[in-house]
Image (cartoon, rainbow, N blue to C red; front, side, top):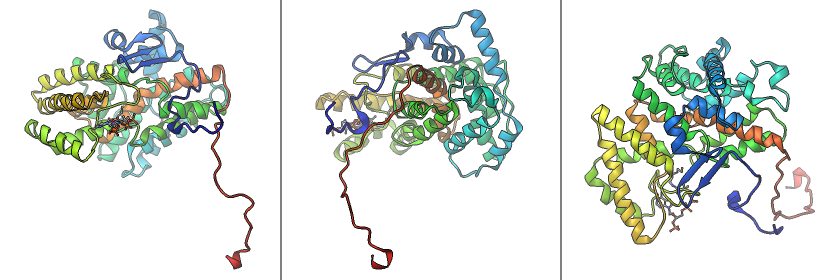
Length: 380
Ligand SMILES: CC(C)(COP(=O)(O)OP(=O)(O)OC[C@H]1O[C@@H](n2cnc3c(N)ncnc32)[C@H](O)[C@@H]1OP(=O)(O)O)[C@@H](O)C(=O)NCCC(=O)NCCS
């Protein structure tokens, strides 16, 4: 690489080899450890997919049973963590609470095992298991309700809905929530995952790495587009207003939320699956308003992009916000849900980073003045 070339946003720069995730942006394909996302979505659970991401292979029956028991036993948060959630400023965004709570969690683990530079992330399942409990507890406490202890007879997604609502979802809704988490579990070297690897590369703990990754995900250029899709739908208001809205957006060069992707130049395969959940839930709840509007946006936007010959298609966020909305999940929890789903992906990358580690240390091209005269303060 030439010394003077600056790769803004590191676009096109390879910084490592990986076996975890393959995103084929041209054909709209996504694989976790070689398994197509459609196959995992159909046959796997979030717990099994987490095992795959932590160990690099699918578990056999005994391995899955052991892992599931361990995950479910780790869901409960200890009283000091609950106290910390109760005392956290209620006006804060749940992502700020989430980031702080990871480091708080780290104070309550076995220091000998988990604080060493090579702590085994597979031992620290509560980083995956407890995020939903923390998010649900904060949400309820913020709204003046008591937090609800997790249940160990429900899958990861269903248990989250239970802790949020106080009532277990029916089987179908619990399954859909669990599958949404599978779709968000991993997606290659995006900003938050890169952040996790950078922190891990200094031989810091997996707690500090995950907390940094959460900070990165919080930014509006990374997590959060699905929240904006839902507010865009409110702004458009009805199917008949879609075309004028898109024409106006095109005139003013306003971006359509949930459309486009740095890597995908075809339909994001996760969006295809998300659309299926939205269709199912819309029929089940007798409310297709958002679904109909999104389909109209997709159709009219496609016509406009075909005219301009641009390969801009729906990404995962195009349908996901509307799915969560139909499950009565408030939009402030959309990014925290993304974080709790991505925890196994981040841990997977931290483990891979440690296998062949070198500390990250890129360069910046210096442009400022040198050898400046230090003027005493009374003369400045
Ligand atoms: C995801 C995203 C940030 C990718 O950004 P990127 O690879 O840097 O692409 P750019 O923002 O440079 O866009 C390239 C071109 O496509 C256009 N474009 C990209 N996304 C667009 C969108 N959602 N609506 C309208 N036009 C879009 C840009 O205006 C630009 O056009 P130009 O070449 O005429 O200037 C971008 O598509 C976006 O902002 N999408 C909306 C937010 C979103 O849904 N984010 C979730 C991502 S999973």
